[in-house]
Image 1 (cartoon, rainbow, N blue to C red):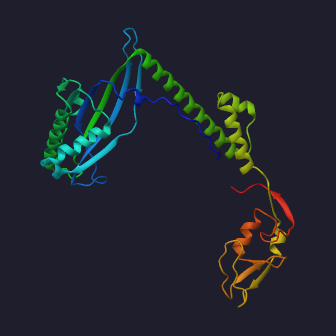
Image 2 (tube, rainbow, N blue to C red; image 1 turned 120 degrees about the vertical axis):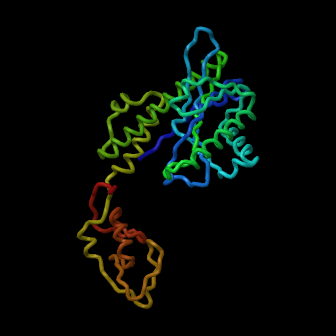
Length: 313
């Protein structure tokens, strides 16, 4: 299927928050994991970072939400929990999360219990590291005493960044987000239309494209459609079945070691090969594959009787 590239907007939500002071909320809970998927000697931290952007305008209640829609899994050996290495490992993890802040809020326990528990305001990032390590040690201790062999050691960190932007920056971010959503919507529509054309074996009329794709993406979409049609739907001029059946089958002698002009591999003495009327010789599978999409000799352009056929997909 033809592909079309839509350039993404130059604005990025991550760049808007690079120097912002913001609040980070961390919900910590146990995360039962199957031994079928994870190795027993490790502690696993499953996390997801969701970012909420809001405006500092008093009357504005609009928010922009960045949700990766997928968890990230981080692991390290359980033995690290009893050494200073655990602090370094968790410090690196926090750096990877991109949640460095001056205001951290912590809550831990079973997920169904967390809504009733108050937030604990942490002193700094070192305090956050300590809380994560202590909670991991607690989970490991509980699981080690659990006789259920199917349960592994894991914790889940549900993280939310609350970022308040100046109203002008928030509006720029909101505009860029809407533009990216528009671009993605049109890209999805283009891919869907190209799939319909490929499955149906024919190009769709322009008015169908105009109903699904907006400007300025329409012309690029139509170009992708034409390229796909040229590749998939253009009739193939191939050799006729009767002319292929008349090709001579010969046995390779000592002086005819090849190579085959198609695959460039030498012939094996005593093997069967196929000779064209122009006297050029090929492996049978090689020349049959060639004549299925062309009616001329690949060396001298000798023409066999031809016929039109639909391209083979």
